[in-house]
Image 1 (cartoon, rainbow, N blue to C red):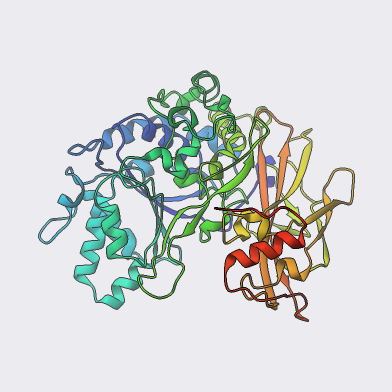
Image 2 (cartoon, one colour):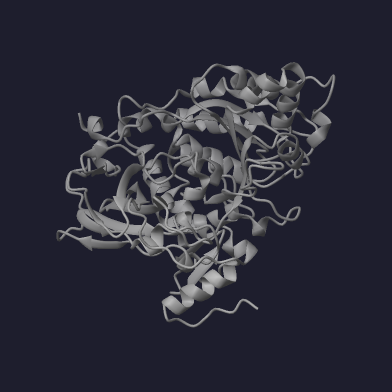
Length: 509
């Protein structure tokens, strides 16, 4: 059976969605796309909520309409995925739809304020015993979550409350009511990803990198907007039983989609490590001290990406738009799945194997600084007859850096092909003084930088599909080689680095 050769997963992330659907079309667009990946997730709630853009109304009926459209696609979808990882039924998903509080923000939070039906469902999901964290994806306001956190804090001891809240992960599309800041201030231990900026200054947020460069005017000349154009969407997305429910966009398309792009199981993202980056962006902790508030809040980081104009664009938005061609092709391919039961008439993802290690989880290896390792992806295959595969290995440097100036801190991995197809490569680590020395003291360390090598395998199908595998290379320095003169200020480190590389000193004044 052809589907038995398709990708499998080790587990399904638990997902709970809060959406201000129908304040404008983008939530409906995101829900359409989300359902195309529903076989990868354990969806535990679909709750219609309010936001600053729709303060006293919720629209669960519009979620139901999209699930009704999904009902016409699910049987076809199941013909294009592994038999062990089938899509949930439309009936099951309908049973997860609830209303949130029909009030704005903190008006839903407090003593003697009952939980909304959506809040009751979320409360029960947090309390349910599970080894998996619950990912709460916030596409609108967060008062449903805030009301539940208030209830837990009121009903449980501090120890039990902390234990329960350690089970949740939040990815919010900025703050869209007055409860987001309250949550982060009141419960700083909660794992919370969100862009923080001036109120309603969404063009500053990483998530707008999904499609917002025309509307917000950032990174001009960098991203390729062609696969976000209305005509492309009309031809490639708004077709078939589910695609016909995908509305035209008003401002930017799918502003909420990065929340689950972050969790899609494609071999790239590592959800518990937002600083690693992936389709849903890259984020870093805002508080790295174990003193004071010790907040577990992650906000925007930046990537440096060569744009269509040939220039390097350095921005938070680039952490998402850099992947756009791949995630839009993926979207279009899944829409094709909804329209046929014929496996041979659609494209399916390559399955990567590196050094006899299959699967999508990051491959972890240790190697001495300055040494070489061999990575062999020869056993990688494509489930579709006749598809050719292209192998691209590249060093994702930004996740290893602790500062903006990546060049000063993270030296390049050397990647040498060992065959004509680039399936097998020799990777050489930088010397100890480049990857196994403490930044300020310049003292050698036994365990240096964690270096990120990405393998992208893309097939020749239509549209082409990409699978990734992240190789995490832990640089070691057992003999404590390297090192240099200690510095009391970062400027001294930068000056020494510039002199060592015989390059002009970069003056930040």
